[in-house]
Length: 293
Image (cartoon, rainbow, N blue to C red; front, top):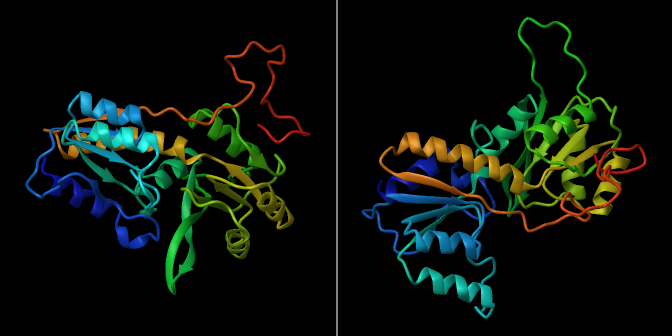
């Protein structure tokens, strides 16, 4: 597989012009158009472990959603230096992929979440940057069922149960009433934190609930004042499902190239967890006074 082929494929599936975030592009190595990749490693992040695997097992290309350098500063961090030291041992190419630019892609992050929650797209949420309008999320409604006159009401509890089972999240952070009926849900994924501007945009669109990758205490209070429930689904969990699907799609598109998925581990831990022998084994289960489901 030529590198220009994989770049063309991603530009078709996840066009750069639809995002105000970091573009999809090659970010490390001599990625000339005629160079070929026989082995490709898919990794959510660019940890030292993922780079070491790529170098030691001689992968030609790493496809990741993370950047090698998040800020243009002097390289003094010992972990960054160690990454560059590893990358000098084998001529691997790194491609940064932003898969959040295509809301309609079935195997993209938004497509995965809408399928899990049995939702269908209705509209998009836009924001402005330098007088240019960019989509930052989706507004969805409950998917209509064929030959079904009366669709049961979708409640916040139903959303939480589906996320816990299919995204495999034993503990879900949320704010709102479990029995609240949801008519319209906003999906805002990625590294963009919830803020009052986004909450007001969702309110104007008639949303009852926002599913977001990150939030703060004060933004939750503001959302509840607008009668909007909020559910937190870390982008790491969605990217984990996305890369597994992407590996299958790429294997079909480029059958002569071997695609492997490097399973990154979430660095964020919870205390207590299942590995600790505490008497209170019901920690994390829902109760009306708590905020965990």
